[in-house]
Each structure stands twice: as structure tokens, then as C-alpha cells.
Image (cartoon, rainbow, N blue to C red; front, side):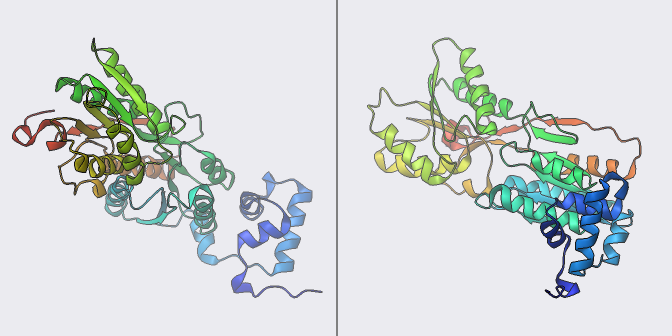
Amino acid sequence: MSSPQPRATVTMSDVAKAAQVSLGTVSNVLNHPERVRSEVRERVLATITRLGYVRNSAARTLAAGGSNTVGYVMVDIANSLYTDVARGAEDVTSSSGMYLVAANAGVRGGTPRQAAYIDHFIEDQLQGILLAVFDNDVSGAERIRRAGGRVVLLDVATDVDVDACTVRIDYELSGYLAAEHLLRQGRRRLAFVGGLREIHAVARRLAGAERAVAEHGGASIEFLPSGDLQAEDGRAIAHRIASRSRAEAPDGIVAAADLVATGLMQALLPEGFRFPQDIALIACDDNQSGRDNAVPLSTIDLPGYAVGQAGMNLLLDEIRNPEHVHRRVVLAPGLSARESSVGRERVGRER
């Protein structure tokens, strides 16, 4: 007969795995046993006894609403959008006498790593979680709700149906603003480069750019996709563009992401392309890592700080207000015109 694990090492996740139930079920057995079928409840309780699991007294305080800590699971700490979100959220929590704990799922970690952080925050019984979603995958919200938690979703698509408040940026408007900016510079052969239509943010930006082009007679737009949104993807697309004659190359490019635009510029400059004389270039996400280019990059400003503020205010309202009603918040982007689309002499005068 196996011995129980040392008490200090046994977690709710261990109990869930051994009992072959979800983490939310274990949480409900401990906090809301009436919600769990009797046979499942008995199995979980027997597993708790067998493993020697002991609830943390601090966690019980958190579950009772005495915690002053909330969590934020971001997509990618290397993307300044998500660090801007963190700053906005933290400013709200600090002014409210609370603390924010942030976790970076990372693009390469993907949904499994995000789920692991969600489970950790659930286990620690945080007051609530701000969750930036991976490509509109909102399954994390259901995971949190099943455990009796509170969640606000950030960076979701327009058509998401979920039991939670949501805060999103109008990505279609960002694509529209970017293309309209190039069209106002007299560009007529546009290309939208980077990403796949299956990525919701890319699809919305592309739709906005296509809408802007449709409003201008004689203008056209093509989509040059890539598997990811990194600088190397931009360089690969640049080689395809450079293989064309100048008359067939686009005279204006909307890049789905600043890193894609950086790669484009790195590969096209040595080929003799000038920005903006030959190609006017603008990107769509104002990533800090894309600002140190040979030619300053025009970009769409995403209101990450405001997203963090709005998301945290909604989360705190749900925590504190028994009459809380879920809301959908949509924030508009702006535009920063720099040398890559307007030339050095017109920077600061064009929008």
C-alpha cells in the first residue's frame, strides 16, 4: 500500500488528477459541495484523505473574499501591448489598495501554459483573473467560471459569446486607418502582409484595410500571408516582393504586425527599395521592439494601457458589486505617422 505524499507537496491539481476530475470539481467539493454529484463528491473526498491534502488557510481566506490580490495572464511579455495592459491594470489595482500578479504564457507556450497559470491562480484562490486570450480561444473563461472564479477577457473578437466581461481593441478600425493613411498619400497598389486569415486579429485588420480600399476608385489590395508574425516572416515576404518588377510591386504596404514590417524593411532596403519613396509602409500594433528601425516606422497605436484600466475596473466591479452586469468594451486605436510612410519632412503633420 502506497504512502501518502508529504502534505506540503500535495496540491488541488494532484487531487484532481488522482480522482480523475477537473480542478473546478475539486474546488466545488471544497467550497460548494452541493454542486457536485454525491458519488463524485465521495470520490474526491476519499482522494483528499488518501493523498493527505490539507487546504491552505490563506487560500480559505482568499475564497472568502478577504484577498487583496488579482491575477493577469498575458499572451507574450515580449509584445509591448501586453506590458502596457499590465501597467494600466496595475495602476487601477494600486489605487484601489490591491495587488496584481502577472504571468506570461508566452506565444510558444500557447494554450497549455496559459491553462497551467489559470490552474495555479485558481488554486491560490485569487479574487479574479484578467485573461488575455490566445487567438480568440475563450475556453480559459469557462475553466475559471467552473471553479467559481471571476474573469475578464482581453483581446477577444467581435463575435465571442462568453459569460464574462470583455475588453477588445477595434482591430478592423486599425486596418482601416492604416490603409486609409496610405491611400491619402496617393498609394494605389496596396499589399497587406503577414499572418493568416484564421488569426482573428489579422482577419479583422485585413477586413478593415479592404474596406478602405473599396472606398477609393482605382485602388487595389492583395494579401501576402505568412505562418507567423515575426521579423523572419517579413523578410520572407520581402524576397517575394523584390522578385517582381517595380511596376508590379506594391507602392504601399500594411503590415499585420510591427515585427513583420521590421523584417520587410531589413530585406528590402539592401534591394534598393526606399521608404516611403518606392513603398510607403505602416504597421498595425505599435510593438516597442519595432521602433528601432533604419527608417522610423509608421504604426497604429493600440491602447494597451486603456485596455488594462478598463479590464481591471470591470473585474473590481464584479468582485465588489453584487449587482454587477457583464459589459463589452471596445476601444479605438490611433495612428502615428513616421518617416516610413510620409517622409522625414512631413513627420508630425500627417495622420
